[in-house]
Image (cartoon, rainbow, N blue to C red; front, side, top):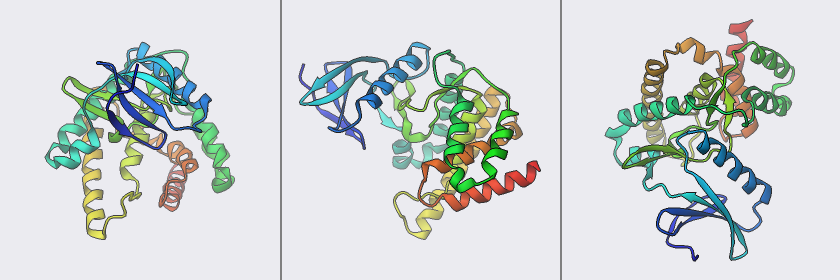
Amino acid sequence: MEKGVLIGKGRSAEVYEWGEFQALKLFYQGYRPEWITYEAEMGRIVSEAGAPAPAVFDMVELEGRTGLVYERITGSSMLHQVQSSPLQLRKCARDMARLQHATHGCTTTILPRQKENLEHAIMDARGILQDKAQTICKMLESLPEGDSICHGDFHPDNIVVTGDGCRAIDWNNANVGNPLCDVARTSLMFQSPFNPLQQSRIMAAVLRAARTMWNRVYLNEYCRLSHAKREDIHRWMLPVAAARLREDVPGERAWLMELIDDRLRAYA
């Protein structure tokens, strides 16, 4: 079969139409084969467990490149939808919470464990954290386990809005654990000072205000659906922020360290 129309492209691959109902994610040459295999495995696991993820059908070789054949999901990202129509922000924030809550209703025994992933990330960042890393890992041990499927990188650009509802994409960081950890990471990303487009000071302030509102509506809706308490979500912020250091997101290190120090003082 020949690839169809180019649907989109990212840092690792291009996405093309593949037949009538499927999409081909065609990775760039040089992309490590084991990463592609891992993505396929993670996608199959979460889809078969009932999570709102596109099904993975096959791995193909085309034009000297490796590709994964996915169920085609037609729509735009939630981030793009809000950028195009800001009045949709509150609705999208609530839809986002509902999608994540539905994901957390699914479970499996064959995904990586959430706490193990966090501990590895925290220890990888011990060059920054110094002796705080061990303290945070010890605090992590005291937090409750869980058996929910968690996306691991749940944010508006990883949600596709379709005519039939929302679906999540990019499940490479999926894990099994406590859903409130997953919520804490999403909330942390909304609060990040990272400014990817280097907007002016005024536009950056507008963006921060929009993200603050989105975070508030999202958390309110998730707590309403799950009956979770805000303080239980906030308990996860310390290990989540410490693990986030490993990602080295521009402009975040000082902010994360201030947050971490504040949390450590609160738990002392």
